[in-house]
Length: 155
Image (tube, rainbow, N blue to C red; front, side):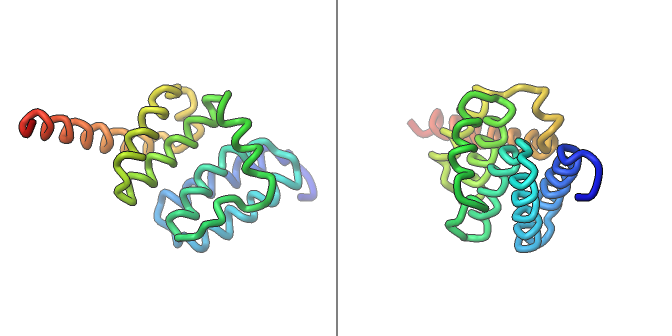
């Protein structure tokens, strides 16, 4: 980057990657974009990288790859930030319950969703795909209601 704010450039890349993923763009293309964003963020030491990692993990699982991290050492950064910061915990748990839901791993989905609800903070919705989160929150809540209803009717 020749001039300008690297933080704003990375934020634009992050938002582009997030929108590309949720709009249904070809996942292999989105992965290439995210790899580029991760490299640039690491190169410019921009913390926004920890916001992209949970989505990168979901993308990797959707593609069936085991490489959940774009570069070495990122997992440690993600782990350190995710635990203490609701801004970073929210997308992490969201992506965990989302991918568990997509792959029909309902036990893992319920556990991740409960963790997600513990850290839910409305201000973080502004930064991370609020409409997508609201949509899947509703689907998971409906799933839980149906599950409870079936337990009550079939003891």
